[in-house]
Image 1: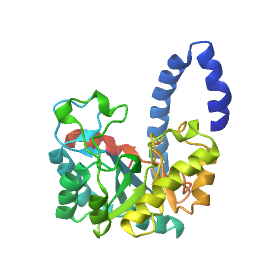
Image 2: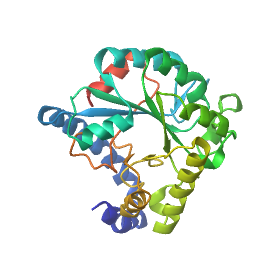
Image 3: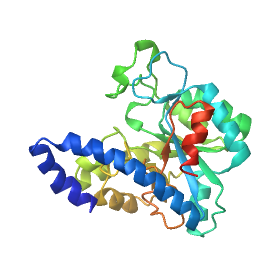
Length: 282
C-alpha cells in the first residue's frame, strides 16, 4: 500500500498541483490517528515507547527544532527515571522476540551522531544510569555539520559530527549502543535496491571497523512512511540487522515489525509539555 502511494498516487497529486495541500491535511489526520491508536494499543497490549532525540545543546536559534537543552534533557531523564524502566534497544529487541514486555519500558535514541551526544548527553545518561543508542551517519565523521538543514543554523549554533576516536570511546561505554544511520543520510526510498544496500553496508562496515564490534541496529534517515520501502527492509535482512527504527509516532508492541519499530520524536519540551506529549504515547 505504501509503495502504491509513493510510486503512483503521489506523482499524480504533484502533477495536478494539489500534493502539498493533501499532504498537509493528511499529516494532521495521521497525527490524530496515531494518538488515538496509541490509546487503544495501551488498552489491548503491553507497550513500550522509543524516544528520538538529535542534538543535546544550547543554541540561540533552532530553525529545525533539533536541539534539546541539557537542562530540559535532564528533566526528561528525571521523569523517565521515576515513571519508566529505561532499557537499551538490544534489551527491547530481546523482550519483543520473547514476548516479555512489562508495559513500562522506555528506550532513548539519538540520531545523526552529533558531538554533543558525547559532550552533553553522555554525562547526563551516566548521572542517571540510563542506556541509549546513538545512530551515526558515517559520511561526515569529525566534520562541521553541513547537511541541508544544518546550513540554516547560525555559525555559532552549528553542530560537529563525532569523529572516529569519540565513536570508539562511546562504543566501550556500558550504557551506549552504536547504530547505523546510513553513510550520507540519503532518503532511502529515492534510491534503488543496490544503492540502498551500498549506503547501509558502507556505514555498517565503517562503524564495525571503528568500534571492533558487530553493529546490529539501524534507524532510517527521516524515518517517515515515505522514507523507506520494501527494498530497504530487504537490504537490512541481507545485512543481518536485528531491528530498525522509524520516526512513526506509535507505541511498540510485540506485534511491531522488527524493521519498522516506531519512535516518538522529542523536541526541546519543558517538562510540562514533555509530560503531555509522552502521555499520548505511553
